[in-house]
Structure formats: C-alpha cells, structure tokens
Length: 310
Image 1 (cartoon, rainbow, N blue to C red):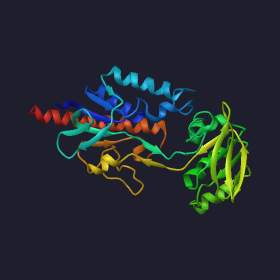
Image 2 (spheres, one colour; image 1 turned 120 degrees about the vertical axis):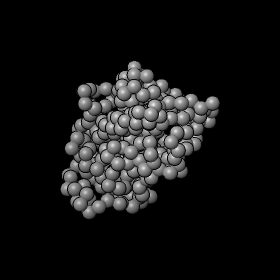
Image 3 (cartoon, rainbow, N blue to C red; image 1 turned 60 degrees about the horizontal axis):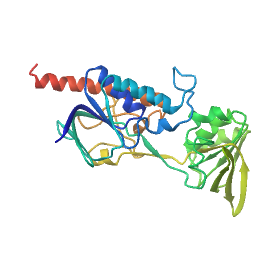
Image 4 (cartoon, rainbow, N blue to C red; image 1 turned 30 degrees about the horizontal axis):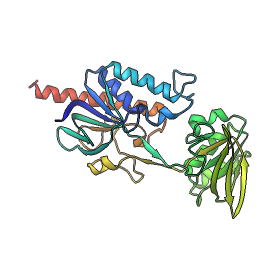
C-alpha cells in the first residue's frame, strides 16, 4: 500500500533539507528519500568557510543542523533508499523505490550532480586530505601553497584563477584538448603564478597522511610534481535520468529546467540545488530549496482547499 505525504523530496542535501524545513513550517507533511545518507555531497566536505553564519564548520556538522531543523518540523528522512521509477504527470504523484511506493501532491527534485571522478590511485584515498573537487569550498586552506588543477574547460580555468589569488603556485594540467574561450585563456596566461602544462595523463596522487605530489606523464615523460593540493575539475553530470524519463525537461548540459519559482514543466514538480546548475554552492542550493519549499506549500494549500470545496 502506498504511503501518502503532502510532498515527496528526492535528495537530502542542503536544497532538499531546506525545502523540507519550509514545508514543515508551513504545516505540510513531507518525506525525503535519500540514496546514500543525509546531507549528500556536502556532508563529505571537511571544512566550510563560506556559509553565512559560520566562520568555519564541517559539511557533516552543517547538514546535521539542517537535518535537525527539518525534523523538528516533522520531516521524515528515509535512507538509504533508491528511487527506481516516478509517475509525475497525474494529479497524485507516485514515486517507487525497490520496496515501497510513495504518493504525494508535489515532488521536489533535489538530487544534486554526479561529479566526474579522477580514477587514479590516491584520488579517493586523499579526498579531503589535499584532493578537492571545489576550489571555492576549499581553496582558502591552500594559501601560500603549491596546488594543481586537473581539467580542460572553462570551469577548470575558473578554478585555477580562483586558486591563483590564494596559492603560491597553480599548475594547470589539461587531461584532454583545451576547451577554454579566448578571454578566459588570456586571463590564465596573465597570471604569473599559473603554469600551463601540455595535455598530460595523471597517473597517481602521491602522499602519506596528506597529499605531497602528483605523478603525471607528459609526452611520454613521467614526473612527480611536488605540491600539497590537487583540485579536480573534470566536469559534472546532473543526476536527471529518472526525471527526464518521467517527462521533466533538461537543457543540453543535462541541467533541470525551472522557472524563477523552481517549478518544472510538470504541474506540481519542482527542482532545486545543483541539479539545476544554478550557483553550484551550498548557500545557493539552500536558497533554491527555500523557494521550492514555499512555492510547493502554496500548491498543496490550493489542492487541499479545492478538495475541501473551499
């Protein structure tokens, strides 16, 4: 038998948890379905210094506060649980997992993105110990140090430019042919502390307790670059398969399309956070979650009023 909620939220990162907080405070019953654990990718970040209200906090602690607030107002979080099918076109939305069926008036998609991983020895082991996928999040910890950026596009270039304001030296390591617009390339070349390497293959992240170097091969020659930080910018892919297969719209990058109220093209369906490719920051994800929570609560109230004949 299906479990019914006013709102079903897919994902429990900052966007999903904030949406749940606003729905709960509006008196609406909601459930968050999380594939891994509450907090999502943010919970894995070692230190955060750019979330308003906290000079410094771990991602785990920040999302734990968000979770506590959401649960205080009645949100239920179910994890680990994987959504396998959604029917979003009817008045009542149906979300199926491997073992349960959930129904609700509205659905909020807050699944984030899948960051393309660097699949070499040491990359996973040193995550948070010198390896990072976000210069804005972690760059400040590498002031005056030597770092590398692995990537080939404008996003990678932006990471390098950000780090150049903090680090002693930034080595830019393209993993394939460069796809950087001329204006951005000019900015890279103008930075005295950015060294541009030819296309290279990363072989291994080297270290002991923390990162100490990066082994690469360039034109057949292998070397170990001495450095303390490796920033990986291979791109990311919005997690959109289920929503697109259910009729939701995405752009050519795979980013879910919404209006200014976070509403998608399907009635009663909203999206928030990194899956929309907005600011790609914790604070912007939370902001989008707040909007989605408020707007979806208004939709629920209208549905209930109509059902009551008011």
